[in-house]
Amino acid sequence: MEDIILLKLGELVLKGLNRRNFEQKLIGIVNRVLRPYGQFKVYSVQSTLYVEPLESGCDMDGALEALKKVFGIVSISRAAVCEKDKDAILETAKNYLSDALKSAGSFKVESKRADKSFPMTSIQLSQYVGGELHDAFPNLKVDVHHPELVVNVEVRDYAAYVHAGGMPGAGGLPVGSGGRAVTLLSGGIDSPVSTWMTARRGISVIPVHFFSFPYTSELAKQKVLDLAGILAPWCGRMMVEIVPFTHIQEEIHRNCPEEYFTLIMRRFMMRIAQRIADNNNCKAIITGENLGQVASQTMEALAVTEACTSVPVLRPLICMDKSEIISYARKIGTYETSVLPYEDCCTVFTPRHPRTKPKLENVVQAEAPLDIEALVSEACAGIERVKIL
Ligand code: ATP
Ligand code: MG
Image (cartoon, rainbow, N blue to C red; front, top):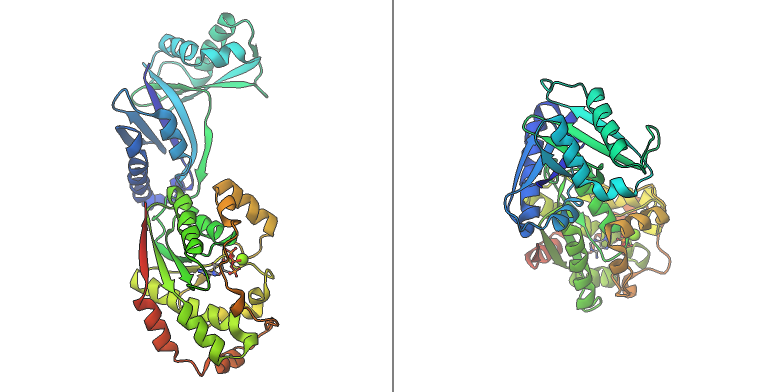
C-alpha cells in the first residue's frame, strides 16, 4: 500500500499574495530536510504539502521525525493513498489502520471532501465507512465526542487519503520567509531559546559568539558550536561567527571603572553585532536578555546597551520566567548542553558591584579612554566562521 506524508501549513495560509512565496520557501526546506531519507516528491495543493516517496526504500519514520522540526507546518500525518471510491477507502482503512482498529475501544470517522464532484457528501461517506468498520470490528463503539481513534478520510483532487490523525508540527513560519537577523549566542540556557524562537517566526539567523580565549576555554567555544548544531535542524544551515573578544575585555579592564565593565562590554557586543548585521543584510540583533535576570538586564541597563546600535534589538525572552525558558530549552534539546559547566563569561571581568540603573552619559564617559573604532575593527577582522550543517 502506498504511504504518503501530508503536511498542513500553518499561519502562512493567511498571507494573501505572499502565500505562494511562503509555500515555495517551505517546499525548498522540506526537500533539503528529506534528502538523507530517500527520494521524495514534494508538492502543494490547497494548503497541504504532499510528500510522496518515489522509491521503496525511503525511510518514512526518519522523514517524519525530521519534518517535526520544520517551521511553517502545523500538523503532520502519515496517510495511505487510495482510489476515490467508497469501497476502496473502506478497504484501505481496514488494512492500513487494522492494528489501531483492533485495539481501540471507541472511534469515529471524519471525512473531508475537497473534490466536490465526489458522489457522496462528507457526512454520507463518514456514515458509510463508520458503519462498515463498526460491523467489521466488534470491539469498536461509536463515540463522536471523545473517540479513542479518529479515522480521517480526505477526498482530494488526485486521490483519497486515510489516516489516524496528525501529530503536531513545529508551527511558526518557514525559516527565511521573514528575512535575516544576527543572534547573540552564548553557551547559556537563554540564547539558544531566543535563537530558536526567532527562527520559528521565519527569520534566518547568523549566530555570533564572543570568545575570550584563554579566559574562556576551547571547550566553551565547542559548546556553543554544539548548541548551534542542535539548533540547525530547526534553523537550517548556519554560519557561526566567532569574534575574538579578549583584547576588548582586557582594554575595558585596564581603562574603565569596574562598576561599568559589563555594560561597556555589552555595548561592544552590540557594535560588533551591528557591523556583522550590516555586512549580511540582517535587519535585527537578537539576544537572550530577560528583564531583571542580572544587573545588566534592568530597563535602564538595556537602554544603555542598545543606545549604540541603529538596528532593532529584539529580545524574545524579555518577560519570561526562567522556568518557562528552561522548559523550552528541554523541548528544543539544548538544555543538557547549556548546563555543561564550561564558563562562558570570565569572572575576572565581572564587577563586584555593577550599576543597575546606569545613566548613558556616565557610561559614555567611562568608555571614553578606549579607541572604540579601532577595537571593533580589530575584532571584526579576526572573526572565525564555522559552518554548521
Ligand atoms: P544565556 O543568557 O544564553 O543563558 P548568559 O546568561 O551567559 O547566557 P547573559 O549574561 O544573560 O548570558 O547575557 C545576555 C545575552 O547576551 C545572552 O542571552 C546572549 O544573547 C548575549 N551574550 C552574552 N554573552 C555572550 C557571548 N559570549 N557571545 C555571544 N552572545 C552573548
Ligand atoms: Mg541569561
